[in-house]
Length: 309
Image (cartoon, rainbow, N blue to C red; front, side, top):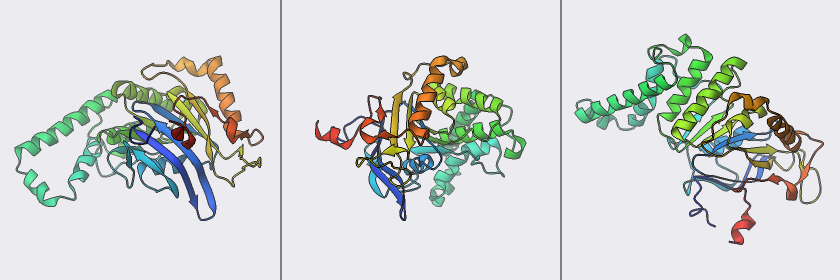
């Protein structure tokens, strides 16, 4: 199996990330197929957001490589969308203008072409098509009457809906989300979870979703990985925070395209799964050895597996 022919849209190959003497991630391997919804969890300081920044191109790994469709990710770009906890909206633009902002920014490096576009019927149709798509997204988000409102006139949930649509308007190959609902009240958060699942089922997008909420991770994801700095290394010494976090759990949650009802959250099976993940990744007193990590997903892999194929 090679990186270029593996059929994975995203592959993280033997990644290590450190800042000075501090190792945050170490020996991280992950392969993701198109259409998967990957939930990423782990204790505070384990490098969840660091991993996401490597995928978005905001950082480069100290060692290893992060690849999208076989190409090393070198910088942020439209192929990887991102939604943060704090709304990435322009306060002086309306909801509709914010959603369409990506198209305007795409033209920014080409001012001469932009001036020509002003008199181009084709460009006018293109802008009209962009606006039509934005309006369809607003309708799906049940916000068709809010397109002319500014961010300060919207609720927290509405602002985050606009931020999600803003990212999706670029048609990214992977949508990265970093704790996007953690600032919302419980009722709004559940509503946003349902909205995200509706979009996921409709668009079959590929999602990398970072959260500290295990219930949310299990409910939303088709797959879950847990990063942790609590494990025992090859030498039998407990890692603590010295070796950097690794993926200690990689689990299949549900098949792509299988919708879940909110009641699943309260099921005994979900409760047991959450307890298992909490023990494996969050409990400093329970340290799996690197050879016994819970890597049950069929696409879990390590470099030595490539050498055997």
